[in-house]
Image (cartoon, rainbow, N blue to C red):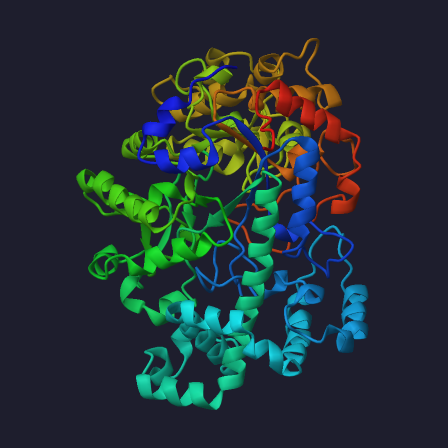
Length: 612
């Protein structure tokens, strides 16, 4: 695996590549809320990252990609945050607070730890309210911390966003957490006099929110410093969009198109498309302000990260938008791209990307999945920015549908078995590989006058189907047999033929792709997961980033192949999303027998980066 990454050094991101090294690396992707230590109170905390860094040193991993850490209020959806700048105070370590008399609160902190023990199957987000209540008491009893030189310097340096955020949070409390759209007009439209009077009356509470952000700044920047000493790079996840009910939108309504919702058009994986709810940007107004809004967001993130993932990278070129008047049940089906003119997409994306690169010395990485315009691939190649190559989707689509060899991956990519929006590998293999989406298949049947309910039992093994997925009967051995049963020709049913060709032989094809012999097994053995991880790490991609669940699958533990063992199911809402907790504490992870196997995969794939 002697791939040549020297061209990266002469690209538009060349200076950044020289800084971090244009070399093969392997890493782990995880939300902070999923990991925990003995010191954690109910949820992963900023200092816990140091133990995760220690685990990376043991296993040879040199990148930690975190999901967004932005303040989500009490909705707990990391990509729908109340601020694109502010971090969430639920990630604060109470015992790691700066400039506070913590001895006076030792019993209360321990009582909170006992009430919200970390390590349960799901995060109990009630911990946030309880933490904030105790943090308020600590804040009020710590006058010295409010006069710390570092705090005062922080207030001055971050004033242009921090003040709006703190006022926004205080106003939300005043109006029982109602969205700013439902506030009285003088606050809804940010009347200078009304806001000034309110700020004067609620000075202490506003300062509290600013103090929380400073404490987070101290703890997370300390984690970055520790990572640097250990030769581990931290990658932040910067959501491309921000919640409609956010400090950003409230403070700068002119930067957003508030009559529209962002989303994604229908595709093979989300047949109804997606509607996210966040408002699209009004780029004309942002450009007129010399991109100040974007610049400060990227610059602030550099305090904590070496790299940053741009969520929905293709949205920089064009964004799927849906009118708010569209019924919710239509999801993302009836929308249009903004801008509508395809000829301006590439130049718009280039301008936004250039501003990001001017604002910080972090390496951008791209989530470029779904419906991707050609200009996105061109820009990523030109700038040598890693895109996302998810192994289960890197196929010869429209041809033989086989999985592409590792040397056919983009060199400027991050090779992955899974993402936070997919099933982890073991669950994919057991419940999803070799199946089609039932909603999609039904919809395409209805469009062609095919009675789906009649043919469902003829085509699919319903006894072994589930979770909205349909598994083909083994007896459906060819496209000809499928068409004969449907009573249609290939042109009339090409969508259904395409679905068949992409999924019917998927399990057998992948089994042999990773080098497994013998009959295809239903459950993931240790040999199988080892070969799967080895294959994705051997790809040409400069980075290999695997979700924590997939690395830990090298050890056999209960629930690893469960459909519920996933971080998020896009297009759905409920307690199963954004609440998954790792099966082992960070302390236990240091001693896992599988650590040696992970390190061996990293070394064998040429991704081990020795610390200087």
